[in-house]
Amino acid sequence: MSGLRIRDRSFGYTAVRHAGGFQRKVLESSRKMASGQRINSAGDDAAGLAISDKIRQQRNGLNRAEKNAQDAVSLIQTAESGIRKLNDIVQRLKTLAVQSASDTLTDADRSLVQKQASELIAEYQRITTSTTFNGQSLLDSPLVSTSNAAVAAASTGSALGFPWAELKNAIDALSTGVDQTVDFTVSFITPPGSTEDGAITTAQDQTDSNPATSAFQADVMSAFNEWKRLFERIYSRANGAKANLTINFTNLGAEKPNSVPSDPAEPSYTLPHPDGIGDFRVTVVPLDGIGGTLAHGFSPSGTPGSLGNVGGDIHFDSAENFRVEGNAASGDFSVKHIAVHEIGHALGLGHDTSNSAIMFPLIGAGVDFADRFPNGLPIDGSDAGSIMNVYGVPGEAAAEGRRFHVGANQDETILLAPINVTASQVGLSSIDLTTRNAAEKALTTVNDVVDRLTAKAAELGAEQNRFEKTIDFVKVSEENSASAESQIRDLDFANETTNLARNQILAQSSSSVVSQANLLQSNMLQLLGLA
Image (cartoon, rainbow, N blue to C red):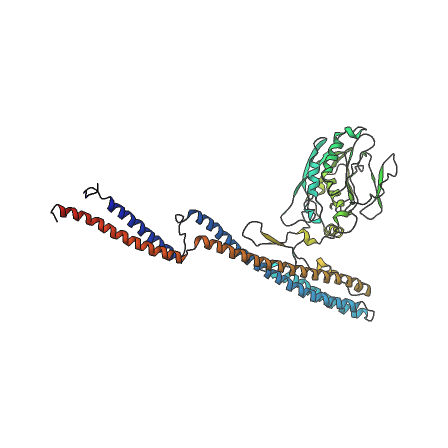
């Protein structure tokens, strides 16, 4: 039953609650319109705030990545301009070489031509060292480390297309017949600050006359089969007592040289020796004594740069006593020393007459590795040059180069190969125009340098086009990120203006109702005659 009750003020309370709610919405709309954003705090839209913050982070990263790519374009343009100047100098050198190659010039004339060529080469070298970007030299990047180079089986020589790590992993798979493992590192061309650990395993095991029952032979065969997709291998077993572990790198699809043993009683093969001093005989029966270890090889053959035509042998004779490294007793062999020597041959290196070099020919008993190489294993320029000549891989392919981060996330980088076109690197420093024959040879060198500079300029042009396309892509990504963030965070003013007007009307209406609720109390006074 309806009526007037003193204690009943629910109508007034309801009106006050609604008035307060509408007033709060008016304030929220005013704050959003003042900031221009729909989300000003987590309370406005917690999920939306989390998503928009991630998108904003992506957008900021893309903005910086765009600038990085633009800097890369500037760097490339600087390097290209330097190469163009170098090309101009080389073109002039070619003119001088052609002039000197003619017998219309006297020796005195050629002497003057040589002076001009020397000055041009000096200017060439100056440009290579002075072409810089932000203090970084662009045209004389270091390519080969020639001191304190580490040596070993898992090699950064993968730059040469030679996967030592896979061989190392296959050999590590041996489970029986394993005597000991030696850990060391190999790097014939060392990128700055990087060496790779590897391992090579030596084994000593007696084998009987039945290959099928030899655990050692089975394990070796199994390990090498893991590598069969890259290279063919042969496991040579001696006729008699002990096994010889032979790692063979043979030409894919090619016949093995002189594959028929010359003497069945003493199986051996005649192979070309890397030193160029004649053939080398590889024997597959156990040998004993200082010079008896089967630790030798022949250099890769085939077309330079063609991995499929790489050939070479590495032998380890398990009939000998091996030590991991250094301090070998009489009759023992340093496994590390042998491995170093054979890896060098597999890379196409010949012997070095210096007893401090890797390819020193003596491999025998009692060799103390630490005494022989107290400062590590140096690799001189001839060794490094031999690697490049055999494989046709330019030195800069082995260096790290410059990486430019062109994305908002990790590893979104572009690698710009290092450039080294110094006079010594391209062969200009030794140009001689003082005789006709020397000038003829110089022409070949100059033509090669022109081809190299032209190719490098073309590479830089291609890289510049790539970075420009990257800039376009990053810009589109940045625009899409900005649009996505705007959809979530930015305020729709038209919609919010409507909400503000609505809430203002409702707030005023609620305030009016509160006033009406307060008037009900005065009606009670009138009934009591007190008003």
